[in-house]
Length: 567
Image (cartoon, rainbow, N blue to C red):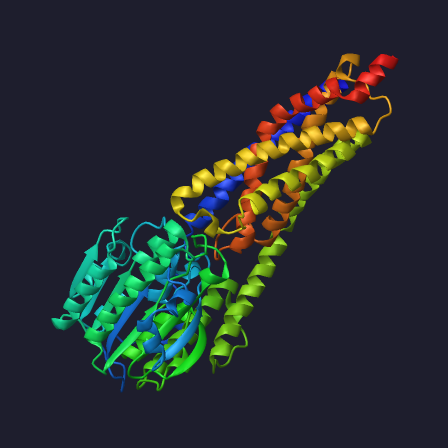
């Protein structure tokens, strides 16, 4: 009766863990997708005073004609095969950029056009719906009286409302299977030549499509890059009158296999090319959030209000009147307002002056560190409770039978070997959003990992039963009154696997938490955390099927047969 009671209790605990993991995984995923930034109404004016109206010219600044081109999904390596960009590099600035996490299109577009990272803008995935809530280059150009024109996918209207801000637009449906960059370039040239634009933005989508379809190492990707190169050359040749600033960059790169969103080097380490009046011939390193402020200074405008980045000083040949100074004042006010929002008034206590970019970044970094330390201290009881529960499950198995505990731990080792071998060696996956390649693949990825968790769990149960039989000279089989014990071994093995996964989940919850209140978690560990929860959920199925595996091995294992014969 004791063994039967433990069997029923074990199944109940495993199913409860599976249900809890499923709820936590759903909650945590939605926290990232539906993240609501607390920074979109940041009170910068508290520290800088009211910003002059955008319609007021920046003192002594030259309002230069500006052409901004975003080439979606273009890797740095591929850009260096493009004649159009290499010619601009030879007379302008070659900047190595780092994109923020997650390196998805909507978040990176928004970062590039506003200087606001996903933490600030609230645009965290391509499922973002509605108008972006932070000020962008489109808003600044319109408010500054520039003749703004936009050519590109119609997503730009959904996100940034460009049709209501521009003098003219040429927007096309995103669509697939059709090369659109040539049409977009034709439209951009027409808009600029007709005098309807002195601030032109074009977004070319086809390289990204090729990356998703075939990967950045493919012939299709190289062919598409070559076509975009030819079209970009036409755009530059048509608009380069010696007084035009060019700013050309991607939002992110692509993995060789295809995909982005994660932390891989060719995905997040990209480039920007600046050329024209006010641009120094140089090489520099910066972040994607620095692009919008740099363009603003070169164009002679105010920078977008909530840009976390700053104008790239090495790119600027001069300050364009007071434009660079205005950007620095804005950035200093943003840093103080951000630090106060994150850490409270004490976060900026003792800050007398901000005289450099390093000072500004130091204030924000210190606020982040203090808030993270405080949050982690508050999360200790929650994480500790989960860790104790996981260790308690292992302790109960050990108290019931030390042989069952050893056999279960052998099953844990087997489970990890099988699951991780399938994940890393067979599929060549990483803990990365780039694994999905496209958003439509997310659910299939999750379902496949859950199926593999069930498979690995069943193999683990089989190994646990074999080890358990080997630990006794005369193991009694199910036919000798040990049916409940052999069935319970399968459940114990599943509980042990869930307990080890629970310890890893407890570490993540202490480190980052399940809620996204003021920042996103480290998405490398966040991705692993979600996969751990998926495994825990799927193992609820194994808790039902696994006992049949351990029973069958106990029934037909040679040692058990030998013990029966001797009896």
